[in-house]
Length: 116
Figure 1 (spheres, one colour):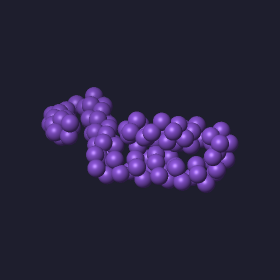
Figure 2 (spheres, rainbow, N blue to C red):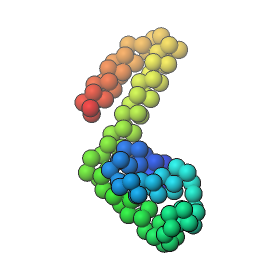
Figure 3 (cartoon, helix red, strand yellow):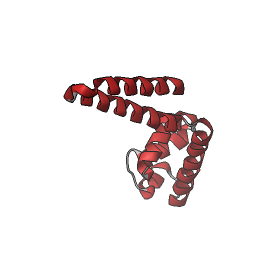
């Protein structure tokens, strides 16, 4: 995963577990694409303080993911749904493979349910 995508996913899943101050600054960096200097000026702290806080938030959010694996499970579930969607489109186009595709869809659906 690229860094910005990973940060947004982690923040989406675990951001509410940060303090309000951490959440506000992290959101400005990740979602609002503000520079560290802009945030520092807004918050009345040093640029280095913003940098340190963002790094600390990265570690905190990654720690939650390391323990809970919610982002990982979400990404796998989304990929499974994508595969199911592809199989249904293939079934519409190639009627001889409908039976095979239905079996595979059933397997993917079961694996998805087991994850939940």
